[in-house]
Amino acid sequence: MTLFLVLTIILTVIDQISKYFALTLLKPVGNITFIEGFMDFTFVENRGAAFGILHGARWFFLLATIVITVGIIYYVSKKMPKEKEYGYLKFSLMLIMAGAWGNAIDRLFRGYVVDYFEFTFFDWPVFNVADIYVVCGAVLMALIVLFVIKDEKKE
View 1 (cartoon, rainbow, N blue to C red):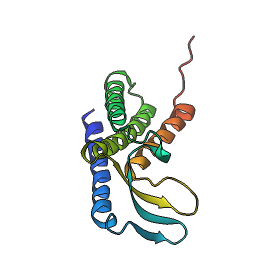
View 2 (view 1 turned 180 degrees about the vertical axis):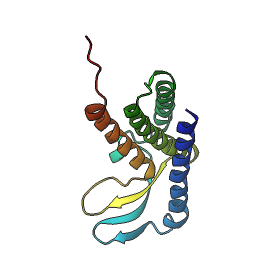
View 3 (view 1 turned 60 degrees about the vertical axis):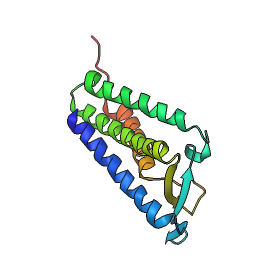
View 4 (view 1 turned 180 degrees about the horizontal axis):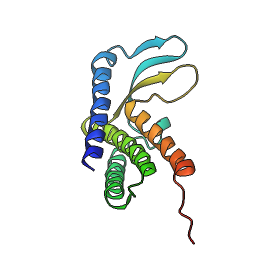
């Protein structure tokens, strides 16, 4: 459990460092083209969730992060089996928790989430490293639950 929490904190720190650079280098200019026609760095103060839903629901998101954290820590420390395939599930939960923490820190101390990655070849919300953690963790969890973890056959 200690390694799980240490790695979650490290991932959260990486997210916060990337947001620090966005705040100090990108916010003053607003937008920098990274790959023409594909990706830009665009500073956005996101006061909602993806696609701007639940705009201004800061305390709801903070409460949700607390509930998610408690649930994940309880499951990982008390309920999760020790088999190898559950280690992969633990990794996916670590990504989700680190992403939740990264965005919660923004909401708590800034009142908004710092977003800065923007795909320009199609219409998609601007996002950040914490969002990448959550999406990758959720996709990985779905793949593990669907294809890796097998139910024990009851005889």
